Length: 204
Length: 111
Image (cartoon, rainbow over all chains, first blue to last red; front, side):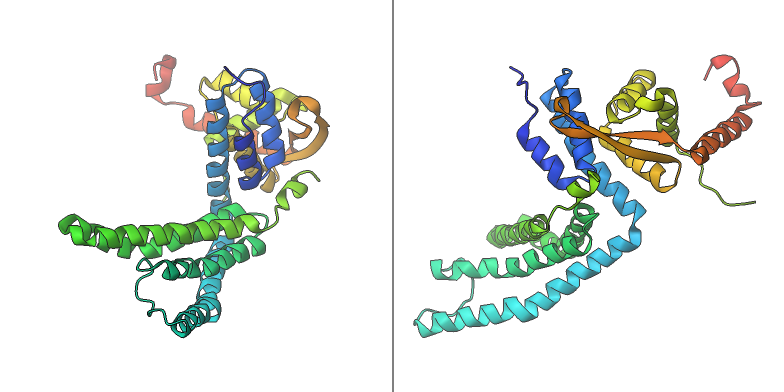
């Protein structure tokens, strides 16, 4: 049975990830009340986000380049200033406790936290990109994430082709995918953390 | 010859919908107008992206209405075509008309 209320999650996604979100959400709510389906509502939300991002990137190419450079600079800096020192500190702490060196994160439960260390840099870089490009933060963070995914693609391709020819590489591929997925999620969470001022701006 | 941007297909459709709707041109009626006359489903996001582009070009202007309960307390954004926008629509029509003329393939509505 069709609910009289529009899908709450879809509306939340729209208001978080789309510019002109309040006006557009209002239009969607109005149309939904006139008998449109849940599928239509979700399709409109997804299309609004995709079209909005694409349009903003096309219209602000220089800003997009700046966002990608900002993200990568923050990522490189944070890896030297935060991730690496944290890794060394954790490694020393384990050594002091008489626990083995950190070779592979999945060997022992106490090595699991190192998988999250790069996520600190990811979160910070995502947050910075969104912070410096508030008006177009979704499009800019998306482009930055795409650039990160593109940079990681050769290694993924190497592992994937190796895994096809030799199953010995499958765990490495799975490990790589898991770490990279966590990393991408951390960037997106960083982007989401940035304040949503566009809502207030669209209501002015 | 001076360089200029002509209105795209969808941009022109949105501009014409705005002109048809007059004072009541906001997201939902614009969407309906294009869907009913165009005969295909249109994404509201595409309409807003196009309106944003047209607004940046100065062809369209907008103002925010009052929030209403049937929209979950959200306001409508009303759009209207500027003088420059109207000029652009007329210019696009003139150019298209000139391109249309004298094409045997398009005679008698066969195409």
